[in-house]
Image (tube, rainbow, N blue to C red; front, side):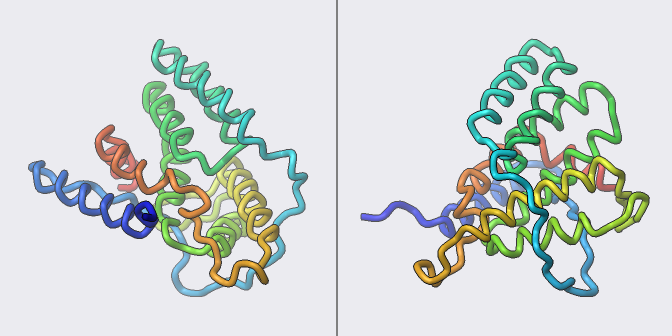
Length: 215
C-alpha cells in the first residue's frame, strides 16, 4: 500500500491549522507574501552558479550548530550559523525559522523582515511546479535595491538571497529528465518536509511573527 500523498499531507496540514484557529480566541495569522500580481514575466535562464555552491550536508552541520546556540540563547552564534546554512541550502524552512528566532531575540527588525519574507515565500510554493518556484524567485531578483512591493522594500541582502534561490531552483528544474518524467515535479515533492512544518510553525508561533512584520 502506498503512503499518504503530498496532496493528502497538505490537506491534513490545512485541517490542523483550521482546528488550531478554532481553539484560539484569535484567528491563525496568515503570512503575507509580497509579489507582483499584474503580469507574469518571461522566464529567464537561472544564474549559472556552480553546483557545489549548494551542499545539503554542509548546511545540516551549520543548522545543527545554530539550534545548539539557540538552545543556549547565544543568538549571535545562532544567527551566524543559520545564515551560513541557508547559504548552502536556502530552501530549508527550519533554517529560516531558526533565523527568525535569532533576529527576534536580537531585536533586529530588518533581519526579521528578511527572514519572514523568505519563510513565507517558501511555504506558498507547496503543490506548485518547480518551474513556478524558479520564476517566483526570478521575479524578486529582478527588482532593484529600494524598490517597494506592498509594504516591503527590497534591499541588497534580500535580492542576493532571491538570486541564490533562483539559481538553486533553476538547477533542480534543469536537471530533470523531461522525457522520463511527463508530470512535472512540484516544489513540495522535491522538499516534502515543507507541508508538515506549516503545522510546526503554527505551534511554535512562527506565523504570529510573520503577521507582526507584515503589517
